Length: 500
Image 1 (spheres, rainbow, N blue to C red):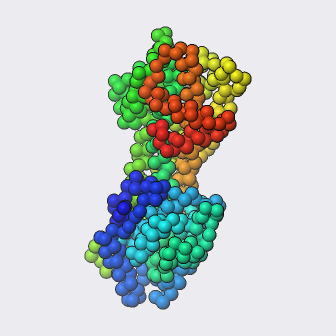
Image 2: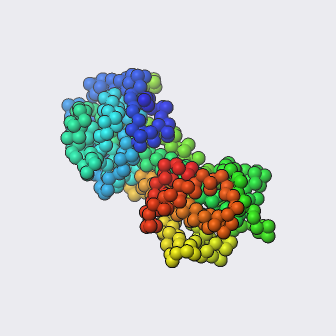
Image 3: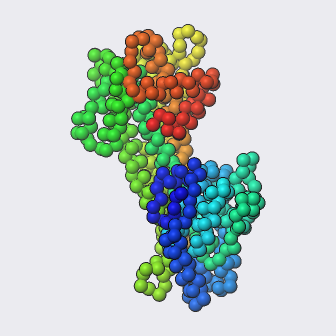
């Protein structure tokens, strides 16, 4: 059971809830803090003091006062008007992560809303009620308004749709079938549910997790390619990397040495003193990717335990008005991290493609057959899979262009600088998918090249990394005659961590 209190959620917890349906519940202290801030909101409404978004309009309409009797209608109209997302639905694991993050942020007790909101989200997660949230429509400031509004519609019985095995069903029908009562919106409920950066963070967090798995898988693919190309191991010596001690490079070089241990192919050409950059510089490039993912993890771990709505209720401050309007919803911290990680992950694929190009090019491969085509059958080897990898690497280059440097003013220029962080997060997500497939192509090529080496010299010993990976790669490659199917099968196993 993962207990939500707004402080202790980990990235591993998020992945477990999003993908393994781990159960969640509101912590007892968190409940007390939520009731405390909600009680202040209720008492302040009775006094008619102005509180942004509770008894005032939103954004550029903040100076418009709303009578206390209409605050429920205000919340309802906010959800309806802001549910303006368009396009294809987000994947279910992304929506589940978004729901978890919104529940965790509210559980901190700084949002002025009822514990019932968090309890309803936890029950929806437990019973598999996952709203259909369109991918497009958020600029990342004020948070992910449109995506979270589509979630709120279902929570409050205002419509919306829920993902189902064969498409979607209405939110009301899904909640009824799951035995979950919908809530009637009260003051601050609508704003509390919709004002935050949880979609951006959900996408970024899951992509970060997948990228961390990918970089280790890429190092295994690199080690297998280095073996097949009869590489030189001195480039990975610990004393070399101690001279330029970037943590990621040191870790990557150590992992490569571990994977290459026992290989008789490495260092088997005495006249060869150094390799091409795509081999020799592998720990430097993949180490840089490791380091930018480390930075991204720090941002994500901070963000998943942050309050990101507006206003926030600071109940321990010695002031009469505990509602503070600020900009915690702005997606810039996560957007910049996503943009940075995009570059690192794109470089994983770029370097991988250069190695597999050498494997499939007869003049560069230390006498492997051109295209890795076998001599006993008329085939084209791995020519077109390399082309696929090249196409994906090229696509990554356009996706890697930073989104967080862009801004288009919204809301009558009240929101005059927006983050575009949601698009940055989606592009990171897409680059991870593309790069995973490129590494899958390298694993297929490297395994085929190593098999050819074994056939030409049966006494050859492979490194530890290749010995572990070859059986699975060859099993997946042998399960189909269609190259694309083999690539997807290996990519799926990379995602599961089979090669990390």
